[in-house]
Image: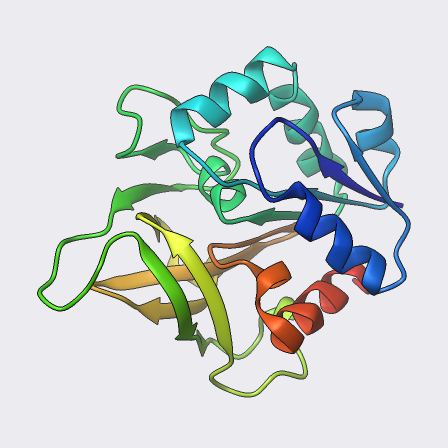
Length: 201
């Protein structure tokens, strides 16, 4: 069973639909026991960093997510779900993230000819050994919607990057923790392959 953490932060339905299309048994829940009993866990998210951290705290989910990480259960953060795994964000100064991974979330810099938020399809540059990207072409196209981006402290965890007004760490992997700034559930066949790679870990 795959648990999708429900903390009132957006794209839960589209993630659930994509996983069911792949034939997976899915539970959208904020129940700690269900999450900790799952074979895999996904933290989706659309919205603001500060609000999301408040919701995770309010529902008592921060400790649950740390426990998932410590138990070695495969865990996937999507979009805001990636950002929350890190230590801090320009979007919410003074608010601590989950701090499971080291790095910070920065505001996309303005650049002539580019619109922020970054909404649309971009190609990824893969580092070659990311488990989520097995069986994909070297520069797969995926769908982004964001105004803030990851700068990971240790670039060795970065498995995909892209360029949009700056260099963006678009996907990371460390042990059982995986995360994507883009939306695999909205990225067509490429995104379905990424999710399939995750469920088959």
